[in-house]
Image (tube, rainbow, N blue to C red; front, top):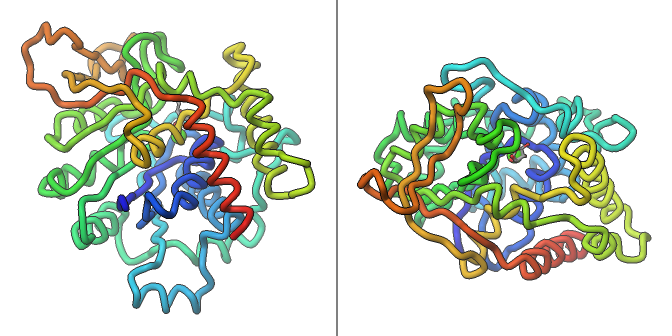
Length: 336
Ligand code: BDR
Ligand code: CA
């Protein structure tokens, strides 16, 4: 069983990554969820993370929390950085809506009333990096730190606690070896905080990058959506379909895609079953200087620069097995 910490900015695809992390119980034990600015402000994505976790049955009552804390089974949720290391924050309402997790009526997909009740589940014991550090450093084995947003929290963690580089395997959704999405050659998570991405790639920690070339194969087709919906009688399944339909509409409007790529769960899928991926360890550098290409992940596949290899890059993923994994997480979430 792999210990996992998920750092995310929900976000429609992040929300599906949370579901996969929570309901692949035999392979993954989710220790904590931290949030980072990105798809929307950190306040909005934190509320979304909490609302998802509640809708998925992953938040416990206060009484359960006390018992679980004693048994070290409690899921930690902590709010992270509100802005990139050096640049102003950039959000992505055109893809994820004003709330960061809208439905097609322009309202939050998961109810956000009872904000105080949701926020009561946040860990307030310290700054995000300190909370992450304490849980990762005391974990019984190495932790897969899955990052599905900007790398600000991960960079800060590795800057403040460089010794953690030996305790974590960073698995990130982001980057590209060819074309970008929000920049001609830059992918959004890298583009919004390139300096943080550079810190992570140069940290010496084990880094696996699941780039756009792979996530663009994880298309939520009509067939996938129909499998999730089943007979249409389950409200929870219908809500997940609404999530995918919103994402489908914005991807169509913004990029002209027929079906939306479900980026973030691909990074989780790598942790659950790396055998689904074809990978290679190569040199990856992050462009931080140029205004044209900041955030570009420069993948030196032929080792032309003769620099040490620092990242495992995924080239492909077995997509049918990926969807089976998602579908069984949905089944489990419905059953439990
Ligand atoms: C990434 O950008 C975000 O909008 C998505 O959640 C994903 O993490 C894809 O470029
Ligand atoms: Ca994301």
